[in-house]
Length: 493
Image (cartoon, rainbow, N blue to C red; front, side, top):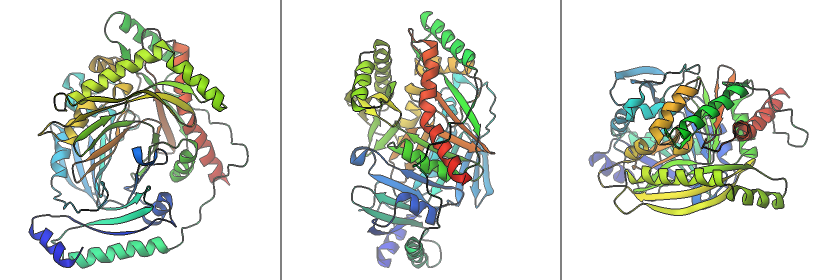
């Protein structure tokens, strides 16, 4: 962009203008760039390790954000350089988020990646209470105490195009600042110069020897209590209250390793289309989710229900046998079909009449420790609605709540012993151009005050077996705990 083009955009009324440069990405990885440029509080790495062009063409490294929004219940705090500059008590925090985003009038520059900044972070499971008022406040204790919403204003980002082997460094510039264009170009050149420097050495992850035993965890339930909760849900189903409920248990351990080493181990053991590392200063969120919550791109709404699980086999033959077993399991198929219907209904709430499509039905996707049945539902966003309307309609996913959704969540409130927090919510971004991409916060660790917390659950239907449901939660956290063992082992050397 020339200075004259920059000034024309400023005159057109934009208060943020992206300046960008493109370079080959043949000497660095998203992880190395994060460590060089962004390894400080209020930064992030969103990385696509599996999936190729279809699900994860771009990986994003967010440089430390000066402006951060934290929401607890209905209280909103805006922090600038870690100092609170605004606070509000609001009736609808989701509406406030959208209004806040609209403060930024960002020029749309042709040729840049689909994401070049925006609001990045998470919306916790309990954000559904802003939409479904009948749920009321969460009745359960909240030992973690993390915000219900935490969003960073991402105004400096490096975007990897994994398909083309290129990267874009992008900074947003306020054209009202003195010598704004020159200062922005200087910042870009400074980023490129830092990228040319060698990375600070870190200990390698030693995969040659045996891993330490998976750590013992402290559960929010005893096994008996969890199985009793499953039994209580089955009673509700038989009484006609609901068709499915998705309870979960939180598993906690002491954790002393560097959170980035956990991320490194997790991307080795459980690569998925949605890998994320957030350094929020007082806590970290690290995850590898296989499941999109909702995506809006060029007004196309996408959800991708995942339900039905088996562990991976030791051989290809064993994997195929487990796939056949999964696809012939009447309980798993019934659960998945129910969630397809729920996904269609959720997408239909914000889509044009007749535009909802089931584009994939009950395909098997394999991950490092488990395999799942997956389907794909799309719809055309109705005129006059926004990505936030899609999030309102779909959060939380049916795969993390049940059906009917509101009654299932009431039962979850009754039976789960602690507030879910990040788990079951949305992790991702609202881009300046109106697009949105969010993953369901599963296979996700919250690291705070020397402890690591991971949560896992499963869908309960009429013929669920309580003992098997407990085992399913254990299988789902296995990749995370293997990664914990490797990170701790690496840090101890």
